[in-house]
Amino acid sequence: MKDAGRKVTISIDGKRITAARGTTVMEAADRAGIHIPRLCHLPGKGEPARPCRLCTVDVDGRKVRACVTEVCEGMAVVTDSPGIFSYRKSRLEELASIHYGDCKAPCSLACPGGINVQGYVNLIAKREFGAALRLIKEKNPLPVSVGRVCPGFCETRCRRILLDEPLAINHLKRFVADYAREFGFKDEEIGEPTGKKIAVIGGGPAGLSCAYFLRKQGHGVTIFEAEDRLGGLLRYGIPGYRLPNKEVDGEVQTVLNLGIQARLNSRWGKDFSLQDLRDKGFEAIFIATGLSGQKQLEIEGAGCAICALAFLKEVNQGGRPSIGAEVLVVGGGDIAVDAARSARRLGAKQVTVVYPRSRVELPAHQRDIEEAEREGVQFFLMATPMKIMGEGGRLKVELARTVLDEPDQRGIRHPVPMPGSRLYWTGDTIISALGQEGDPGFQAYGELEASIQLTPKKTIKVHPGTMKTSVEGIYAGGGPGHRPKDGNPGSGRRPARCGGHPCISHAGKGRDFRAPF
Image (cartoon, rainbow, N blue to C red; front, side):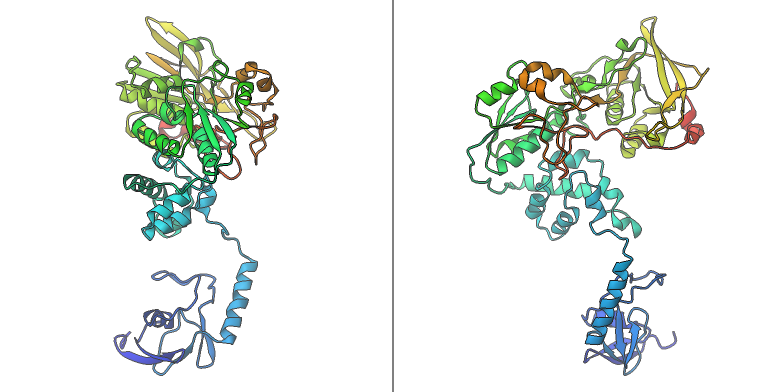
């Protein structure tokens, strides 16, 4: 514009200001510290398809949009009058009548723990780190551990994606937890003592979380743990390169510092029963033993495979199991990927993960899959083992290509072996990582245990809101399917999911269809 550098004098709500020609009324008002409401305006962006018109102002008796109207000499602008207020109110009501946006932040909705993401991010921005951590711990009492292993579902729903890139939400949580621990953050005072005694069976994430919240309410809490250290899958199931034991130790101690008792090397069914706990005065019992069962390979020679959880536990305890140079991992979940990456760190030269579905249906988080590939792990998809055989001191596996059959009653297409397709893998170790499942063996521990109802998946049946079991005073939680509605952390990994892809077209694309051995 020829005279864009020249100044003009205008008035906004009776205040005389100068502005450069070519600027808009909104820009002039912003520079003068006068706020004009807006929803759709983004500096540097183009004209929206459907303007909100909330920035409408009165200019010399005419209603105009402040975001597009340029200033001119002698212009008189009114931003706040009964007429303008009424117009904006009607526009807001019209927008709300066809509202399809998010009434709650998508990042918080995506968080399995239901944490107030916007709240703690805003507090961190204000450098109110203690307040941010207290807000996080209203829902998640283990932020140090979660900050290192959380898959970051919140970041995939961050609204900043529409502009540039998501906020590093999980790293902010990790930062504030580490910062507060380094500078001596202390939890708020616990509630007044209630005189009630509560037993928690299991010292994993669910047990520690339950104990934390109960103690904060003033109850007396005792954790009964079968192992010699607390932590559960945080300690024994997640590899140290992702979550070092020293971080778990610090997190556990933070919980115990509230005055929680821990009975280690106390195994349910051997050292005590539910009735024993009641006899000792515990008024309520929370079962947080997680999913101790492991799905088994149901093929010939399955006994030659080792359990992924047992393998990870040995590695996390400092052991170095002999696995040889070539390893096959059967499964596609988080445990399978962790086992594969751990095998590489133990010196295996070739580690292959075999899974009967396509890449988009792998239950493990895509970020972990990509990191595993960078470390040399290979994924052989749309294939399944059929038989395991011994051959010259090594293991030989017969595999078949898979296709998806017709949808069942729930609309799910299951992988089935492709007729006539046979491939063979020869190596040193096979790790079975088909996923966890419930173990109903606890029902033999006593009469109370036998009275607890189970689900068809062999997990303890609980009320989804209160976590009550079928026996009065006994609750259960932790593991897939046991997260209460308010989102307090459960134990172990997230449940396996099915990507639900309706075809097998991905099987023919690139490495998805090539055998890596």
